[in-house]
Length: 256
Image (cartoon, rainbow, N blue to C red; front, top):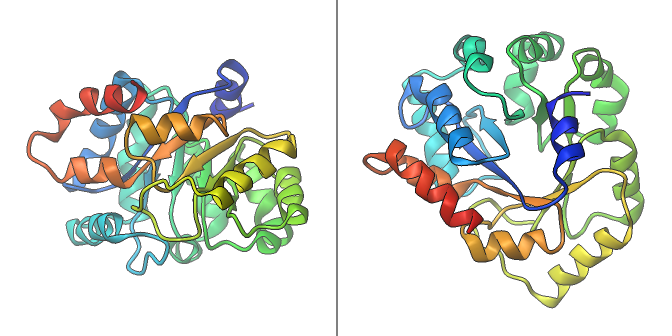
């Protein structure tokens, strides 16, 4: 049982996850930001590793990725930064990014190095489910890493059931099929999608992401799932002056 499982066993609702890009706004702030987020009350964190072609990301996270790459962030640098992570951060940590940098790094090596620094799970939106199951699942399992799958409003019930079967921590429900950074619009079709997934009574908790930016959208998402993920809104904050001092107020504002 990793830290994610322990968290979901202990807390069933209103879970808040925060996404931020490693190496942004400056190269060496990754662990400082993680520590500040835990102190402010975030339940778990997603640290994004930058990639030159982030197709699922909106302008805010794209910009942070470009800046992080310019600053010199790579997976090798990130793992070096995270070596002392667990001396000051105890909440669950996920790495989020695209499959290309992981393949270049070596998937088995990536999983070993992630586990060695205390990472609990990985979110790779463009890693096909069948490839994970047939080629890579043993690397994740051997290193006690959860692989988080994404579900969209268009995902079939059959595929959601399969994702639930392959998952061992939580399922990431996208609030839409668009890119990150939009706003959570609860149309009849989206509400129907949330209710459809909720009615399936999956064994894994569900966390909603894309478009969560304030207390209203966080509270709305928590009506349908166990919690929600804030990404672009927090990355925007990191682009402002004095951002470290603003983190407690930001988290308090989301949680209400």
